[in-house]
Image (cartoon, rainbow, N blue to C red; front, side, top):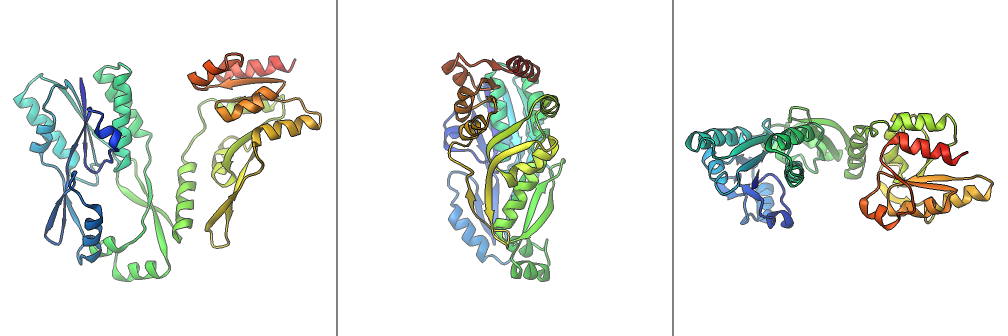
Length: 355
């Protein structure tokens, strides 16, 4: 059996709370002498009201080692602990101390590992879900730890600050800087460092522009799947290639740059002069199937490949079509469509279809 302990900075949706494998250990919040437990009694609306009215801003206290020790008790012989970044809170150190004390009192009783999330909020949740995925796959305790640590190393955290008031109240931002930022409606775009600290990545005027910048920062960190660029380079050496996607040009541009700027047909966001996203423009209805039929109408043969249900129309309408790294459900529902998992297999199938 296994248990996943997450401090209350992590967000546990209702289905995970009812899962039976998860347990929260609560942080404590303090606003002007009022102590608030971050547990099932937490009233977010009341807390935000108190923070807004406070002169000095909120403070927090991590769970004690004793609280962590108690969370390790029970029938589970594998206990995985996920804490708020060690650079932002003492929660990680407290969990480690609780682990050491528990193992002194109960030597060899169970295996316990504490993950420093180097993140917060839903980042902790995703780590817990990764642990569960590995456990359910039948991995050993050591394999779960190794796979999850690798997953943590690949994570990035991004967020936009809606207000700078808390930073001003706790002295991390001067009154003058806060006044200027609020007057100009400047919203900082924040992110995490590799060590789990928080840093400012940039800023923008207005929430929409800040969110757009954050999205661009997120996409800029996404790398193509291993082998994708090499596959496209080889394919483009003997055939014309068009990528058709339901995404938006503004979001896809950084990734397309890393892929050597292949031709991309997708949709467009409507952005006002001030940078605000005001809407979106879909290129055509059923863009993938419509594009394939349009190409065929001017004399082109098409070969199509995709992985999802909305790719099936263009695949079935083409001279040849393939599924690539699709789901088991789609492959089972459409056994007549050849399915491949590796780029060299797909490349060979395309070459063969062109003969």
